[in-house]
Image 1 (tube, one colour):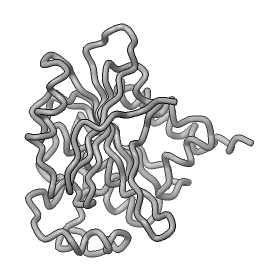
Image 2: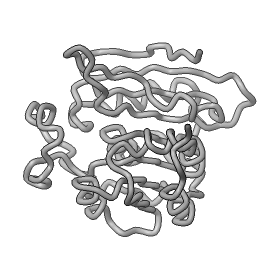
Image 3: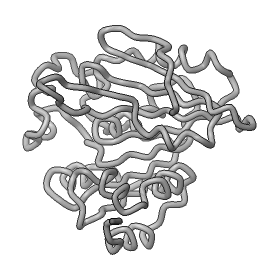
Image 4: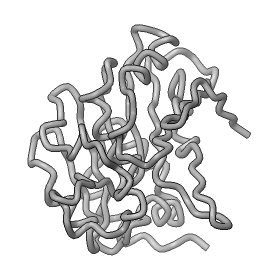
Length: 234
């Protein structure tokens, strides 16, 4: 079983790392964790997307412990930590929901070159003045008192390609409609899926392919249409 070793941990951040040991590629993956799951009354966040890292030199798993959508994270510190393994690496970013927001944010706040970003059902903002209709994460949102990153407005950089895979229901669509229409942003709305898009793609045997295509900038509308027709595997 693949293990991730903790590189840094404090009240706001857990950063862990794993190396796959294959031929050098010059690329590393940044995997951002979502809000996690509640188990026996305790919120649990764990590294996500282990399987996505097999084609990279290193995979860094980044956890926003206070679920602040990046507002409490020290991105300079994160940059310094991940640069220790090689100043010439290029990076790809990946995440789901809160992690998807951070994956989209990463190219604009990290002092390393992030050239591909894949986000499943990301939020555009969590600020109550910008998305007053967002009611799913109030237990976390109400504890954010400082908002240096109120939204992803103005946070998309020309040197990165962004693939956003979202659902066709509820607040996910409202967030998706707020993303700017730029040539380097591709938004795929899986209209038959709810918020658990990554889980539902996995149940159809399509998650690994989706992540691979997204991280190489080759995800297409035809692929998304096929995904909506694919039956759940028994």
